[in-house]
Image (cartoon, rainbow, N blue to C red):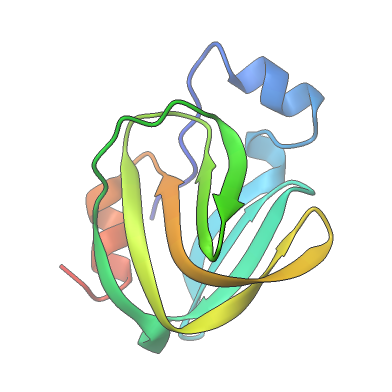
Length: 121
């Protein structure tokens, strides 16, 4: 389907921090979207809770896992970012701490594939 997109300059840094491609995942299975970025982020979102999936508008000036008040950016690149609206909100784990996820912005190698897999094309 797709995977988290990493800029070439950021990939070695993310990998050394345990957040790189080998420890990151985006997959759809059993009616759920699973997203993880190493030890920094993990969420399992029922596809029925994804009410909107669309290309996100930047700019995005940070890389890694960032968020506040239910809106989280999980990225290895400022390109290919998809915005997912989650309603009802779900629980996500951020650096080992449970939090509420209402909006997920995620950089992926194939944004159209992720949007289609979420059933929102």
